[in-house]
Amino acid sequence: MLILHQLPHSICSQKVRIILAEKALEWQGRVVDLARFEHLSDEFLRLNPNGVVPVLEHDGVAVVESTVICEYLDEVFPSPPLSPASALGRAKMREWLRFIDEVPTASVRVPSFQNALLPGYAAIPRDEWERLVARMPIRAGFFRRMGQSGFSAEDYENSLAQLRHAVARVEAAPGPWLAGDAFSIADACMAPLFQRMEDLRLGLLWAEAPAAAGWFERVRARPSWAQAMPHGSRLGEVIPDLAARLDAAQA
Ligand SMILES: N[C@@H](CCC(=O)N[C@@H](CS)C(=O)NCC(=O)O)C(=O)O
Image (tube, rainbow, N blue to C red; front, top):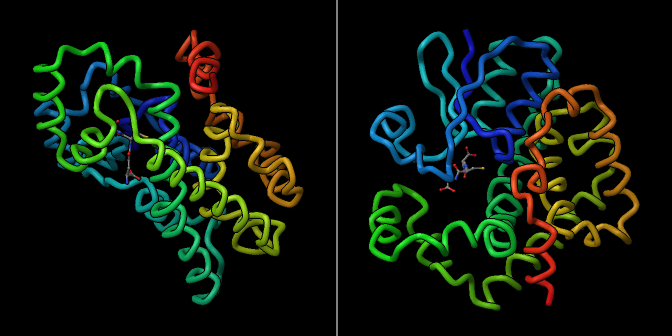
């Protein structure tokens, strides 16, 4: 029995859902509402002491960290394989996975919060905000850096520079997939980041990167994409005034 504690528009949950779809696995979803801070409840923190989604429960045992979950699923349910057959091939795929976790995944949080999610947090009374942030096991620093009025221009620009770098790395990949000839976990982990950038009007980052644009289209053309990205997966589907927020951010 596979249970995924997750959220439709969570990028890290989307990575795992793509793997589940590629392998045609049956699973049950449990929505963890971040806007209601369910991820900071005692119950959820017992499941994942990091206080972030997703969490996979497999036969009652919790596995955390989305990339770890993807690799775990690939080991336990090996068909179809989503990792290269050779040790060197797997090492090359894992180079991508570490890069994806460290660079674009961390960086895309800044424009996501700054331009789309911040108004929800700005409305929280100050003492309540302090109480919630103090409960965050691994994200308190990020939320304090953002505060209730947003990131510094320097933080924002640094994040965009990192995202540009990530797009350039995809552009330079020999292809057709990130880890070579076959679709792999690396593609599943990178593509939701591109979708988030597009939803934040950052798709222009690959306007002059045809190989990266082509790679993203190839991922989106796979049947697993439609299955893993149901309605509610895109930011604009959960934030009705997203366009107005993005207009305001660009003004
Ligand atoms: N390294 C973790 C990061 C997970 C993560 O950051 N999840 C986000 C949603 S995509 C989250 O739960 N954020 C909590 C928050 O915004 O307070 C993983 O890959 O599983």
